Length: 624
Image (cartoon, rainbow, N blue to C red; front, side, top):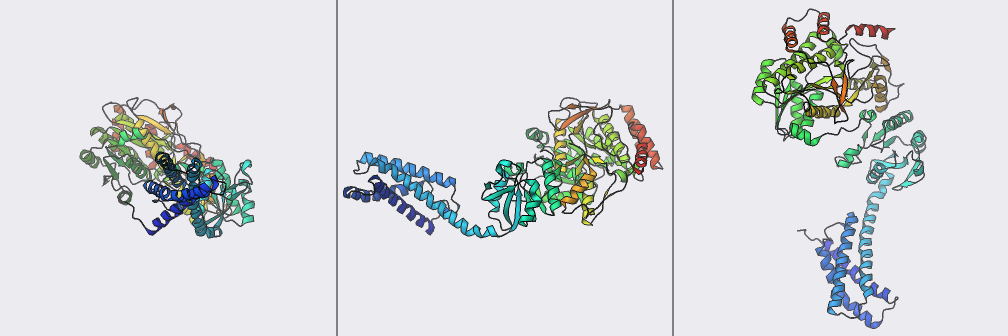
């Protein structure tokens, strides 16, 4: 029950006076501003039963639970319903009780006038309070231009009316029909390509991009224009975040690199993933890495019975344990330090926790580091480690084994790519022969933004030092996607794998269009608020094992569509047989080769499409 306060009694008194005044005004209008004496007596007498009746219905309808300062359309609707009910009851009482000298027109005019008085007074009070609170704010805050004059801009303007940080001085939009018009009192000044002109004219140093669904080329144009004008470009949250209610339109942020890639939102089969992962024990190797950790976050949404984190790095394991303790405290987790090459440790882990789903994300992935002095370690970790995890999943009856692979496994020219291709073949050889064994799913994708060892953190560090940004070749390209997008597609592929075959499919993710690393560097310079003449780009030449471009399919592969628009299945040659696997195991258990070249020659024997000699040829061409 709401405790009454003095303001409630004041509002009741106001509505009582409003009801009495509207009753007398109805008579006054009925008789053309001159009420006859006998009807004036009836009007005065009627106040003593009409007003209590209306007030009783107002109280019952909850009219006094709201606050006038925040009067809204829902409050007006409640007033209309309460007055309509009271009008019907008062008319019925007049007829049934035979009350004289109450004209029918009065019974109609009274509620109409009362709606105007009660609704008008409430909204007038709100307008007065808001003007008193916020009118001064119109002259406070930094002047800012808003790009866009659509729904997102309208939402933004409503919220920024109350902001002490920003003062919107104009809108820019490319729709010619909107030019010169106003949106919430703010004029649409011109088009986006006139940004430089208007920022100088209005002395603006900040611009907000309020077009969350705009095409990537428009974003890029806005960034280029803002960089040229020397102004900071901000943006509003994505439209799906706004519609879901997770964030507010006023949560303005800096433009990020992801905003320029034009990646569409991943549509997940929520029900299927809940069935795939819910109430199950899920083991993730390499759980402290960028991909493994994001997989853990995404999987936690589907309420597994237990998440088992298997990680070699103590610090990485500590970080993911702390993150889950803070943000996923209801999710049961087990944090285990261990090496994927340690078969005995894996056997003990699988025996104790019996995981039904295994995501194998542990790998050495840095191309130049693995190319020479660490070549044999790349073989041991990426190939022998995969063999140990896959064998443990097989022996202990896991339902599904998902290997995280890479586009560098396609026609590999470096040790890392060759070892990942060999890991794919090992997984298929162990797990794809017996339908009773775990379904094997392999997921291949390119670079992910911000992952450990990727180019983005490196560029950020170089920008922080004032440059230069080092790019190996002007024409080098790579595929990119965000870490959450990559993890979501891995889950989707893991769920779909093995449903129409014995398993062993290689899923290829839709990576979009390849991006020139040089263009990426220029974008990051602009996003950091610098011009290209302030931070230089330096070309250093291709590194050992590095390709100019990445491929998602080998020469002999083709793809088949899947029900998901961002996933296709690569059709590869037949899986290696048991004899092949036994021979490979003998090589892996032998003494390490003395020289990296020996490792590469042996890798080329196992992975026939591996062509390490291409590296030297490409470097020679790059120098010329």
